[in-house]
Amino acid sequence: MYTLVYSINDEEAPETVYVNLTNSCTNKCIFCLREQKDDVCGAQMWHDDNYKLEDLINQFNAYVPTPHEVVFCGYGEPFLRREMMKEFCKYLRAKHPEIKIRVNTNGHANAIYKTNVAAEFKGLIDAVSVSLNASSIAEYNEICNPKIENAYEEVKKFIKACVNEGMDVSASVVTGFDKLHNIDIKQCEAIASSLGAKFRNREFIPNGY
Image (cartoon, rainbow, N blue to C red; front, side, top):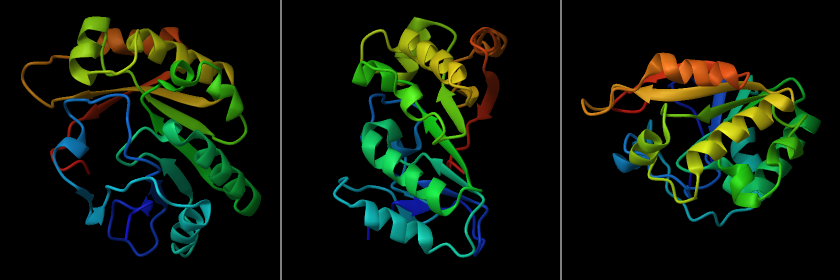
């Protein structure tokens, strides 16, 4: 069975569950877990996107009691299933308005759809974690191998767009994944601050969790 909803601990009632909407992505980051293994805590992550909203809701409802937080993450870029994510957010807002909803994203959505996707999700999501990943265009391209043009600048624009919509926004970087890339943490933090976002340095974990 494909995994759409999973947790990263062994608790029977996790406070946070993660939603694996898609395996498609517009980056191929050199530190990405999907390049190393096929599962997260035993949950098989690869699927072909051939599912319905009902399937997603059923897997979510299997967690009892209801988790406190839902995070769109998984093995792909969540905004590539923009409409599915929107419908599931609407379901959560209607049935579980107390749940905090967060999206972990590469920040390419507005560039992909040529519109302000951040505005579409105002009121549907509470927080966004955007993968900044570098302090320069060249470094970003080397680490993330983006499939879209001007990706690094588009990421920064998306961070600002989410801030403008009143979301709780964090810009993140991953450090310690190899000895070749020494990310300028202070510069990345300054960039995040200039865009009105928080900053998070995520230490690389070989197993991913």
